[in-house]
Length: 409
Image 1 (tube, one colour):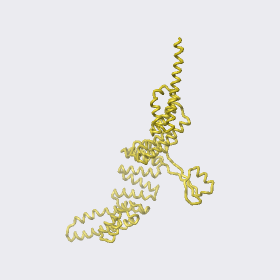
Image 2 (cartoon, helix red, strand yellow):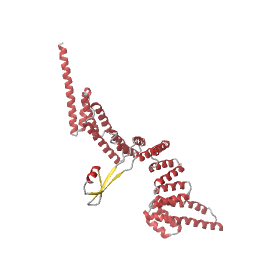
Image 3 (cartoon, helix red, strand yellow):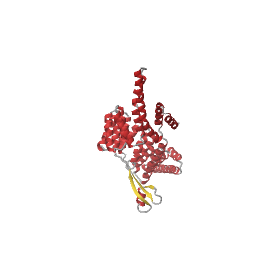
Image 4 (cartoon, helix red, strand yellow):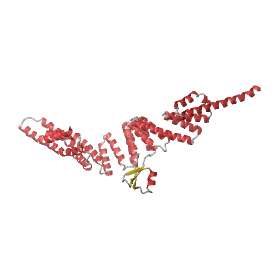
C-alpha cells in the first residue's frame, strides 16, 4: 500500500514537469521567432517534437499557430493556411487568428505580384487563388486575377476552373472611381470614396464625378468559351456563349465572342449574321465592318468586301488594316492579268492584247495609289511604303519611287 501511495504523486509530478517543459520550449521558440530567428524557432520545435506528442489541445494549438507563422515567413503559404485552419478547428476563431490570416492573404498577394512581374504567371495564379480561398466572400477579385494569371501562364485547365467559379458566383467586379478638379490648378484628381465625400463639403475641388466600370461577367463567359475552344472542345465553348447570350442577348462582347467561335468553326454565314447583329448594337464600329469585308473577300464577293472596307476607313480614317486590305483586294486582279500577259505570243493580235492588259494593270495600280498615299501620310506604314515604291517603279514614276525609297530608308 505504501508503494501505491507514492506512485500517484510521482506520476502527477512527471506530468506537471512535462507540461512545464512543453510550455518552456514553446515560449523559447516564440521568442526566437519574434526576434527574427525563424530558422531557430523552427529548429526548437523540431528538436522537441517528441515532447509535444502528449500536449493538450491548448498547447498543440499554440504550437500549430507558431508553425503556421513560421511557414508564412518562409513563404510556404499553403502549409501556413492549412495550419491556421487546423488551429481554428482546435481552438476556435479569435482576434489573433483573424489578424494573422489577413496578414497571410496580404503576403500571398504581394508574392503573386512579384511572380507576375517576373513572368511566373502560373505560380502567381495559384497564389491568387489561395488568397481567394482564404476569404471567398471578401477576395472575389483575387479569383478573377488568378484566372488572368493562369491564362498568361498558358495554364488553361486552372484558368477554366477559376472562370467557371466566377461565372457560378455571378461575379461582375464592378468598381466606382471618384474624381474632382482642384480649383487652384484645374487638374483632375482621383479620390477614395471617403475622401470624395469629404472634399465635396469643401471649396477646394469642383466638377465632382463618379465613373462606374463595366461588368467583367461578359469577359468571363467569353474566356470560358475561348479556353474550351483552345482545348479543342468547341461544343462546350458554344454552350458557354449560348447560355450567356440567353440572359444578355444584346451584349456586344458576347455577340463578338460567338462570332469568333464561328470563325474557328469556319461557319462564315453565321459569322456574317452575327457581325451584322453587332453593327446594330454599335453602328460606328470600324472593326465590325472590316470583319464583314474579310468574310466577303474570303467568299470571293469582292464588291461587297470593298464596300465594307471603305466603310471601315470612312468611320475610322486611321484604321490601317482597312487601307491595306482594300488595296490587297484591288490588286487581286493583277495575278490573272500578269498570267495572261506572260502567256501571249508575238503576233499582232497578241501584242495588241498585251497593250490592253498592260493598261488594265496600270489602272489597278493607279486606283491603289491614292489609298496608299493616305496611309503613308498617316504614319509612314512600311508595308504601304514598299507597295507604293513597287507601284511607282512599275509605272515608271521615278519621282514617286525615290520619294518612297527615301521614306523607307
